[in-house]
Length: 136
Image 1 (spheres, rainbow, N blue to C red):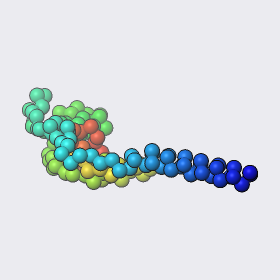
Image 2 (image 1 turned 45 degrees about the horizontal axis):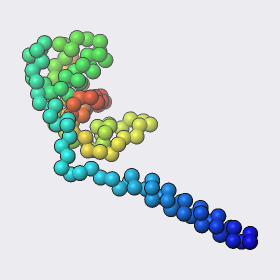
Image 3 (image 1 turned 60 degrees about the horizontal axis):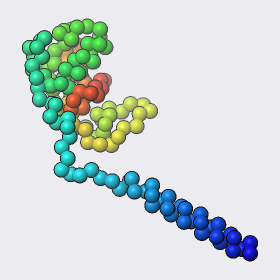
Image 4 (image 1 turned 30 degrees about the horizontal axis):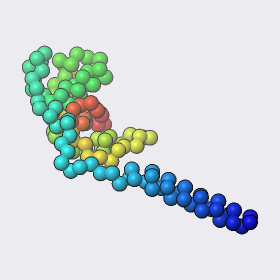
């Protein structure tokens, strides 16, 4: 009788494992439909900043604000000299940070060059400017 109980226990364990693998294993195979358009694409149109009169993207404005905060100067003192459209291979905008794991997703954005008080600064952003990373 004891031998039959061992078979029943092992059969139950195997069934539970199979159910768990089937139930939780489905998440790995989900793919996004190809016809989706990211919402961020609609917010990259350059706009004229009423305070400065300069036409820049929202990402450029975000980089300017980030630098003005970092340098503790007025944003009017910072000039956006270049905004290049880029496609980054990960969510970290292709800038490696120690201890940070980056989502491996295509991330459209910009490489932005700023000039403040005679010094040039480079930043990378996503399309909307919600992520700004300094490039050293």
